[in-house]
Length: 498
Image (cartoon, rainbow, N blue to C red; front, side, top):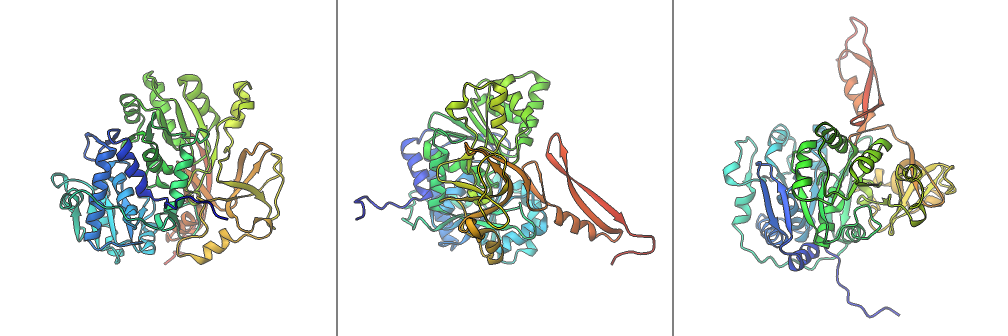
């Protein structure tokens, strides 16, 4: 017997509609690419996202078409998050830090119809657009006054595009399992792989971000600054979760140096922020040099790569900011764990608490974790046994987009691991569920929160006519976490490659 409850689909458009209706005057503050601080509200964001959706329909964009973004964190990028997926298309965020070959592969593999880009990325695409035959047009995310001169074909101005449409878009009632977002992981050997999120998975992930034990724990009382880029796994879900809760959002734009971040943290009275360790090293360095303080910040989420113990100590001891560690991947939407301490650990000495805080945390509700050996056999959660980390859950990918070979390797493990996603991370899990990642099963280097393929680096080096052999290895780095060291053997004199 089924329950007698309404069947309302979980849609990303419902998040911005809810925010506009119940938190319409709550601010979205952005440091714009043009320079000045820009202020808008959820009510204005919903109206402009609707205009954007109408403009896309006028351009012929339909259900499941892919629309790419190449942009910093800002109000226009947020409008794309909701306007694109809300009409039934797929918002494909692209990481501009990738190599040109990877960028071209991603755009062509996704079959993007339009690319929306900040003016700062015009030069990048001018050198690439001839390799993107399927792209019908480029929309520069600025107003007519700031439109740059460009050789890009079929260029449109964002503000002119949406100004041609009136307000009042009727958001369609879609199937909640329809694709809403697409992110390609750079944490891979070979070609990047696409994680295709659904409306349902995105909304469920947003619910998790608003729960008390989540590293973010977003509510309508918070002011949230996502330093993690909106092109990096949807800014860890923050734009969607902030709309669900009605929290004030502060967007840093392209300026991520310590001084610029401190200015926003103080001026906007930010209570929660999130980013990779490299960013926080820059902020700590600025605070140490200037003697300035963090007067409003309560919680700092660190993810993307492991948080050094010294960083946790500096923020907590010197600045009174609670540091929460978390782990996730592009394939997990991404936040899968929380580093919030259980009640039984609250009376431990701080040194003992921090031994827990430097782990990758424990699984959030909705995510299951376990470790398995090479044969797929489950290993004990005793903090000693290690194995490949396996995850599953409603916001964990079930396959890669249009990539059956990669999907079979990652999503079809054997033995006890059948039906789980094989992350490629080697880890231990203790009796309380705390995950400690000890190694990586693939040859990857993580620098500033971004994966670098050692194989790609070696192949690039081997393409030089004077290089006979090459090996890329990771070295610890005080700012970037890891940096690649390339060791090469030069070709003998007179023996040159082609």
